[in-house]
Amino acid sequence: MMLKDKVTLITGSTRGLGLEMAKYFSENCNALVVVCSRNLESLEKVKKIIKGKIMTAKLDVTKRDEIEMTIKTIEDKYGRIDILINNAGFEFDKKIWYKKFHEVELNIFDNIIKVDLMGSIMLSQHVIKNMLKNYKKNKSFNGVIINISSTPAINGHVEGSPYTIAKAGIMGLTKHIAREYGTYNIRAYTLALGNISTYSTYNSMDKEHRLLAKKETSLKRWGRPREVAKIAASLASNNFTYATGNTFVIDGGNIMI
Image 1 (cartoon, one colour):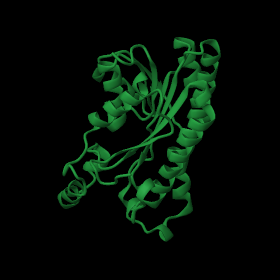
Image 2: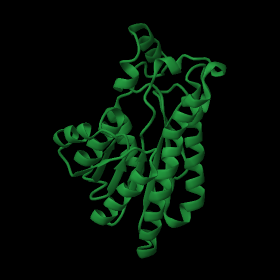
Image 3: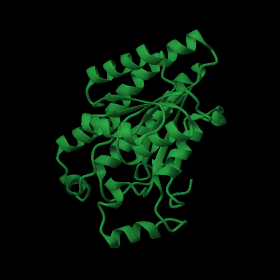
Image 4: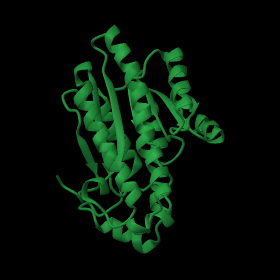
């Protein structure tokens, strides 16, 4: 129970990777997980799926008032936020993904950056305020922020330019938080994901492209959401207290740095 009673806010956590992390943190690590989604119906379903201790919150990460309301609700109930996982992202869209960079309309860049990058920035700002208050009360307090990025942000790609650019910004966000707030026991990490078999990625591909993605890796398989959840939980625990600002590549051995 390495995260026992750690208050953990996970955005975009009613499906896919976010749901898997919420389940693992709650059921296997005994954390107090705040599950977030824009969709109330999805939140109700999650209450039946996750067996551990959870709280649900309607949250659109692009809306500052909803962020402020969510943080206040958590503070009123628990008093603190120990872990933030910025997982919410703009929904994968084939039409956007396969457009050449010079053909992508500027409003598409705006929409994706608003969710993936600005949403993470706004949430991190509000959560850091809470973490600083708790550090002042108790110098042994440890805060952790984990940002979800992707391997194209490291290596580049010939497709999905708006996603790549937004996710590259996420890596800069992590490094800045780690540098500025390390003295307050706030650590930050980026998870740069390769081909993880979530609904939005695996099911969006035909059989041929799934096989090609599988062959890219040294392990010759797709990653499983549970594997990512385990790594995130380890980073959030006291096992990594002297590492911060790092980008952890989780792609089965494709990009090696």
